[in-house]
Image 1: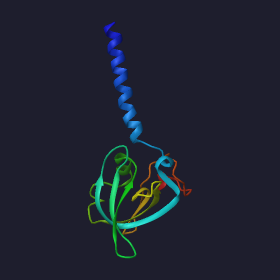
Image 2: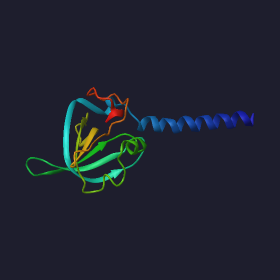
Image 3: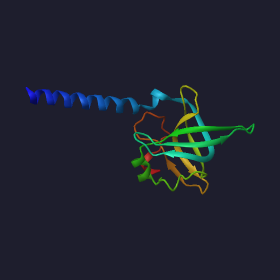
Image 4: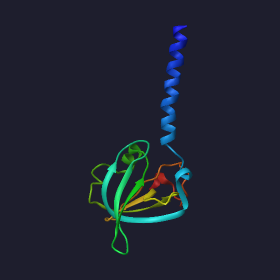
Length: 142
């Protein structure tokens, strides 16, 4: 009886823990609009190296001179490290260009596909299999 109760409690805890993770991890189409591609350029203001997706914050200067803060979702921190991004490559003040897709709610959030540095290096930001539109290139070859 005690074994059964412990097993039930452990199973319930696992299910509750996974429910929070499933809520945080989402498909591209649940949050981002494939019909709203955008290109954002500006200096990095902050990077959140958190799971399940890292977030890069940049300051974008609009044509009229006003500034906006944008949050760009990338892959997992581990995936980005394997692709060549780390805490030192995205220091505050680093100017980057990000192409990606705006959020469905039209807020200043985007799912990033690629990040391009001023020296021309281009690194794939997205996480494979999220359902984002494909440009035909193999993300592992970027």
